Image (cartoon, rainbow, N blue to C red; front, side):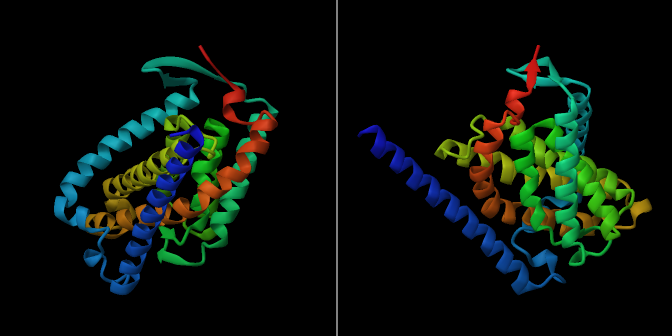
Length: 278
């Protein structure tokens, strides 16, 4: 088979996989709407949380919380894991990087706040189509983009009236959404079947689940202060956040990535052009 036919076949398979995945997420959304927000225990996406129970998810969430927190501070202090080794990561933090942080924070925070008036859990979460921007900021801008995403979520919480001690978990939780695809995608061009598949695995599935469990563990651990019962955290909040992150990201982010990668790369703004490893 010629390379052209092979490429076409790979794109066809990738398109089918993406379409089936989006269809599955759409089915989950229809399932939630049909059964109603008042019956989260009946949702399809909630069943793993119901079957495994609060203790199991609290342990899993705790492990991911520790790992996510360690990676957050490690990366900001200039260390990263590369090739299985702990190495120095030299980020310039010059006016360009500072501008990237400020711009991504402003865009993400403003876009999130624009839908802050559509609450799902008043005081804690809402309909957030702007979540589609978070993994892109990580893929395109690396740690500055991920940090801007975290700050942007904090800004949105403040502007929308959701700011609380729970926002601390949301700060690093949103950093994780951007960090996972930045760190684990090997082809970040959004121009090959491999790149699209990698994005769906790391930027949609893993990032959405990790972020949700990170924030959920935080809310559960501080339930006496925050006031959300553990059953509600794992039986409503966690599955909803996974769906809320994954659905719009799976549809919109690959398109935006395809559009934005070339001009950002051409201007030397992609993280790979601005970071050194020692």
